[in-house]
Image (cartoon, rainbow, N blue to C red; front, side):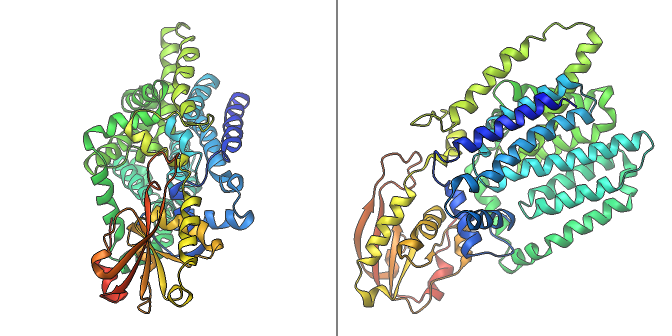
Length: 488
């Protein structure tokens, strides 16, 4: 095991992420997870499962408002991903150099490093997928030598059970693995009781979430349609390769897949190559986001690095050993540009990466202060019967997290997952609406704009020019209105 270089890479990455964790406020999704965990904890949500809201709730309980504590978990998860990638390379037969190259590719991957800055389901999923794959690789290697270690299958199932509480996408990984094993082997895995017992464990732990989805009309499917509408199918593979790494990551992903499919040294792991192919094809057809296959990056980095070792040994020379000294610094340029080191973020021109750079939003506290001031300025009798409704889930979450200590009541929103948190009471006779659009205006007789929130450094314009409007004289009760105004 290449302990020194790999641990140095993992430790340096974790320290860097923690040092920079306080240079920007809560990401909009972090606000949503924190609000869900503190005020709306449930067995399921429209767009994720309970694990991340629980982690956000616990972090805030340990140190309320501390961004450093809030982001310890994602920093450690990213560091663990670097270590795990080296372990996968070692399991595939990689020497110390291959392990180091694979781990370093993980450390300079734009998506994997960038997502290490925030607490989100997309941050946890690559590590969960990587652990499952590592355990399956280890089981396969030991099985090839005649050693049975079915507890590895149980362990993989336990990790998948945790993954189900993060995102349902880990189920796709399981289906792809089983299909590939059935097609190319090792088929003896399918005859192991531990495999199917573990599948039962995953299903059992997912049952409460599945029941929640059933009771609410399977909103996860609606979220899939939302994602499909926001992405371009034909750009999925180029964007996914960009997310893996501009130079090193993309090359190792492509070469690693080729090695898993064709290399004689990795023949026993052929099912993993077809797993990658199956998942990529599924995400292309389903118009998934380019970060969805990030859980496969560590495997592909490792397979690519091991393949380079085999290639070097077959040729019997060390030509090209200088290439990593040029390629890895070049690959690090984009992740460094995305880090919040500078006064203003050096955002990439690529639209996908720009959309994922919401970490630099700065307008949420000001939004909460302005809304709270407008709410406190209402006449006392009217204020008691006024509810606060936000146009979007990020706005609602920001008001819930930053506004309650300023005197705001709980916040409602018809947007995405917030709609499932419930409707305002029918007793409410006025609404303080926070949003740039006014889709609810036709359902009220009178409206008056009380204030407007403007910020100077809001990169993605979510909190710029947001109006705070008072609506009175409702024409429908909230129980009648709420089913009509749900937005995606």
